[in-house]
Image 1 (cartoon, helix red, strand yellow):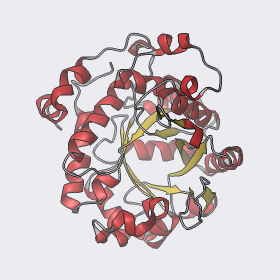
Image 2 (image 1 turned 135 degrees about the vertical axis):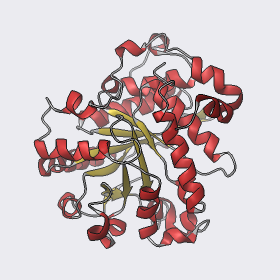
Image 3 (image 1 turned 135 degrees about the horizontal axis):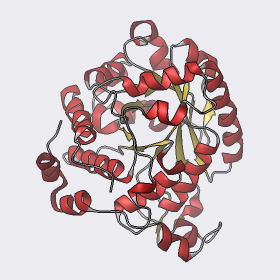
Image 4 (image 1 turned 45 degrees about the vertical axis):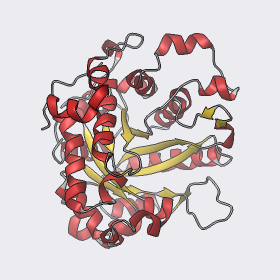
Length: 353
């Protein structure tokens, strides 16, 4: 576990602001925080069947954060989403898919989220050793011009046959294909629950109109928050979302239902308040918000990852799903970054804001 002093050192000048902040507009009393009995508390009275409860509990109980209610997941789908050469040239070891699974195990992750191909090739060796999350759809990059469309790369039943405890999927909310993707993934999630698997939705916004001459609002709290709300509506058990960097997306882009009063009522521009906005749209924390770790920037990756973890935890999130900062470097360094993130969630002095 990382000490508060060690975390403060990595946070630098932001330490006091991030560690002492208290949310005023959406106070912590409204939030369902992660806990050791989270699956029982949230899902035991839901429509999820017994097999699904067992799968979710297996995920929450595994790894260094097992039993805390928090999650540390290694996601590696960039070989499809960003192209394999671009993703793995910094560390060619990860062209070998077995090393992806080994990294997740060595780092003590709750689970590994990756493609059909990666998990299928090593299913019988590792499916009983670390929870598998199969990413069932992707946006391939060989179509030109590139389209923002996620298409299935396999079936939910195939994921079940691999021994997966959960399936993951992406919807590009706001894209031309989003209506089809919503229907497609809603049906896939219903089948996954029927077969006894959990569901994780990558809730990403994609629309050229979300980027104006004044700023890029793809990571605005209000736009990503609404994507989260649609995600929990189609019964995602967890939401993966980028950490918000701004707000006022509906207002600045000039569409949708919005009033200035809603921004004033629901928070401020503080990073923890922005993330709390996302948590609120995940049924006020009853569906776990997992923020993504973002791309690798080099020397600041560990500090950046710890900062994201602090914001997510204090906002009421459930953990981080961190990939590129870990696998685009030697395994020992990747493990160190993942364990630093886990240390934030293990630190009981860092609580809800």
